[in-house]
Image 1 (cartoon, rainbow, N blue to C red):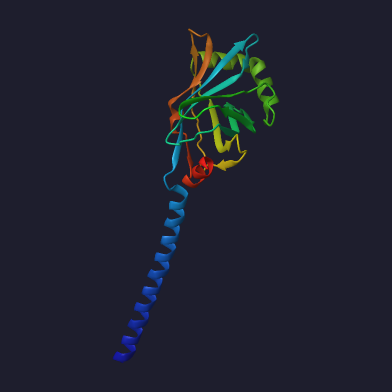
Image 2 (cartoon, rainbow, N blue to C red; image 1 turned 180 degrees about the vertical axis):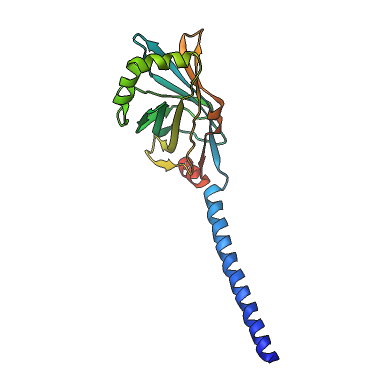
Length: 220
């Protein structure tokens, strides 16, 4: 009887050891993959965003002409021209939204704060519901939007997802490991410049992480 109990205890001990070993292997594999994705990540931080030249014309037509974004490159060490590509943008007001497709932004130099411009035209290529949005803005609802903006009663969402980095010289593309989403920004009216300013602190939370291996490839 005691031998059977000892044998059972031995089997349980062996099973626990095997279970622990399998768990340790899976844990080590997971940590290794995680480290491979995030070894010395370089952060490209969007420090501020402003949509300029937003003007309301008679009859209260909202004109979106330019989005200027300042981007802070931290510890990249790039020595060549790089282009950031924004694949998706989103503009939201009440029940009407506009979702844009591929828009390219070129940055001529790297280091410190850089600016890039995103042109949003009345009929942007690759955008969904743009006819609905702009017809919505031209009518009475456009007047309501202008009034709401001026009185600072509403918030608009403008999301920009930066998902790729291009090396302009070699033509190679390196995808970022994660996508930064910027939202919940507020329209303000600049009385000095006589234009609508679209900015907010939420933009500071947008980060793009690029694996060190991709940076090494870009530098090579």
